[in-house]
Length: 299
Image 1 (tube, rainbow, N blue to C red):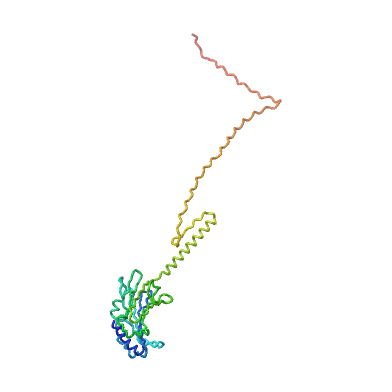
Image 2: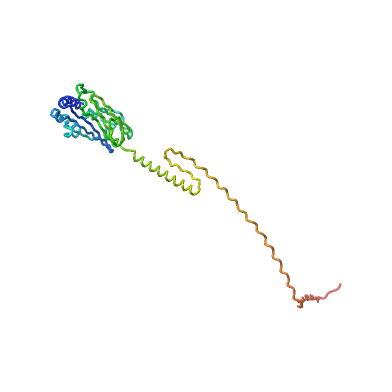
C-alpha cells in the first residue's frame, strides 16, 4: 500500500499548489476471459514538477504493467497511465476474498486479486479504501479529487451496487470520496443467455403455428378438433386425449334363399294324323319246341 500512501502524501502538496488530483482504475473484462486493468495517476500540469512518479512507474513496471506518460491538455492533467492483462481463470477462486483496489501497483494486490467463481458466475468483492490515509486537513479539497473505480463487462451484470451505470448497462462506475471505504460488488457471466431465449421463442412460436393449422384443418373437415398444446408453452395445461369410440362389428349379410327350379314337364306323345293308318305292331314269334331225340326208357 506504499504507492497510495505516498500518493496521498503528495495530495497535500498538490492541493496547496493547485487543488486538483486524479486517481482512477478501470477493468475491461472480455468474453474470452481476459481482464485488462488500466489506470491513471495524474495532477494538474502546474503542479507536475512537484509530483515524482518515477518510483510508482518503477514499481508498476516490475509487476508487469505497461507504463506510459499521460497528458490531457483539455483538462490540464499530467502524469502516468498503466495497464496489465490477466486471465480470469488464473485469478478465480471458490472462496470470497476482499480485494483492496487502493493497493494496486503493489505485490499485496497481486496476491489478493481474485474473483469468486460459482459455476459460470463470477463475483467481485472489492473495496476502495482511502480511510487509512485520511487527513482531515484535505477535507476542503476533497471535491477536487477525482477518485473512481469502473468496470466494463461482456454482458449486463446479474447484480451490482454501482453509483453510475452506462446506457447499455455494461459499464459500472463507483465514485470514491476521500476518507471513505467504498464497497464494490458485482456479479457477471462471460456468456449471455439471450440467444438461448431467442431459440426457445422461435421453437414455441413454430409449435403454436403448427397446432393452429392442425386445429383449423380438422375443424374444416368436420372432425372434432383436439388442440395439441406444445411442450414449454407458457401458462398452458395439457388436456388429456379423448377416448376413441370403438368401431361396431359389421353384421354379416345373409344371402336370400334361391327359389327351386320347377321340373320340366314330360313331352306329350304326338297323335297320328287322321286317316293315317297306325303302324302295326308285330307279335313276337313263338318259341320253337325242341324235341328230345334221346331214347327214353320207360320204366
